[in-house]
Length: 546
Image (cartoon, rainbow, N blue to C red; front, side, top):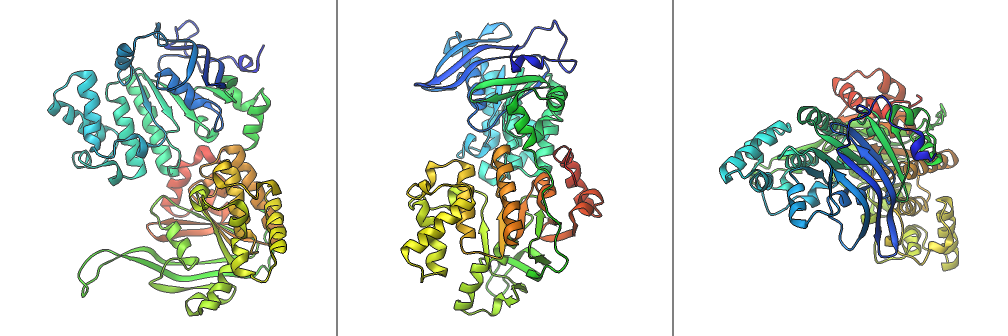
């Protein structure tokens, strides 16, 4: 018996003799000589929610795209029966009728999947015209109705909006509206909540659940996030390197995983790692009544401003992690930029190691910047693609330690990379040659080589697989213990904050609504907004030891 067979579907599955809606048997997908999916078999029953879980490169998305036959330059073999029809042998003309009408897909990144040149209403209406034969006017009315059903406010106005004019959550809702427009029988949801705020993520999952019950859809949820699937799906399949290594009822797999890879994934979920803070730890960063404004039009005599950060005050001590949480647009990153001196402030002051930043000279600013560094959310866009890893990591030393010889500088670079568990062989290589986790380690090495006292971490693990996220969090915890670093950890992931933070500040519409010890905020929140955040993250925080 294989690991994938050990957890056979249990009571959470449809009736034993119900025929599967989708039957995948011995699916193989290869690109040239590289096999992306190997010997994959699973069934999906009518009205069932099945989660396909695995890390990047495991073959999840390739599997979904092969169901719709959307792969190019791929050699595909095996059987794929949808309601008894062999999708592998259908003529392309018939397959076009299946796509959208019988099987629909929600793609991972709606900004790249939606047409930037057409209003979203037009894109939804197109599907209704094509598959339902509706007139242009009736299809437009149907699109507006669908947007309203998805919970988008002012649907008639939003139907005329282009994708870039919508928020991430609204774009994802529009993508779902397009997918369910023709009431398909099978919905393929490929990472539908990646990079969304916790509250929006919960809303999208709740919406998918409602649609599944209302329309009787079968849902294949594809994700690398184990947090999501536990409260959503009935059964789970775990993929690794193109193979299904384990599958079964959700509760059974989580309670008693059989395959070592599944066990490792579950062990990688964030656990409390914050060390107790010394009672005499000094304050290294202090903001008092900080306010940030952006111009919002008006004449030069009557200039209007939009306040993004409103009278925020906070302290950060040596060896402490302050978690800053809140939804997108709450002002978290703008506050971080103000603390770094990269964003002008309209009021208040920032003190770094006792220095008042607003009074510093150019030379004083250079000294101050050595004490505070930042690691951004996406290391691929923050690392220069034209510079080698050695040049990227050494850049801080060129500015802050110009007296070092080239040999001394290289030694320091190698030591910094070694602390990030990277070998000296990476020095001549470029950022595009590394994985997301490796690039984040390089970004950390660049920030820490100048030995700062404060490190601002802006969503440093949000786009990483759970095992890589675990490695980065463990690395950060170890560095903090060794060097007494202070972290301002910005994220919307409350599971990560629960693991890392000593204190938590909750931000909404530019204000810090609540701040206190991590345990108190997570278990006894005072503000209604914090309570809503925690409610949305209930599944994520499940099992976290505080």
